[in-house]
Length: 122
Figure 1 (tube, rainbow, N blue to C red):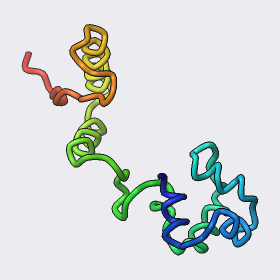
Figure 2 (cartoon, rainbow, N blue to C red):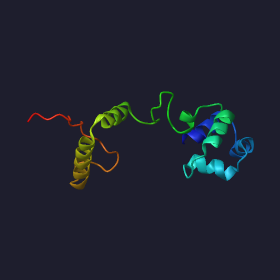
Figure 3 (cartoon, rainbow, N blue to C red):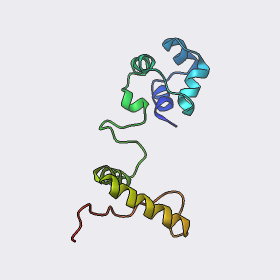
Figure 4 (cartoon, rainbow, N blue to C red):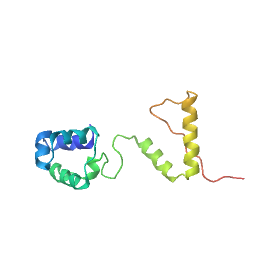
């Protein structure tokens, strides 16, 4: 269940009633909930008003902008990833790809190795 469906259910609205209140069709509500399409910004704002929630919730983030459903360890690794240089990210990606290739790492979920320091001691 994504943020769109969760918010609609918490607002105790059917897809048909939500569509009516927003001024769109029920199949469009369904497509938002299935992740097939994303609403335009004006429609997103209307959905927030109708569901009495925030864009972060509809888009699947919690109150502090963290993706819902990720473990604390995954969030920590994602933050570390963002701190790596492009070269560091390339090295980590290569390691993951190689470990998947030789079968030492399951394809899902991908477990990222500890980031390599971007400083070298030459």
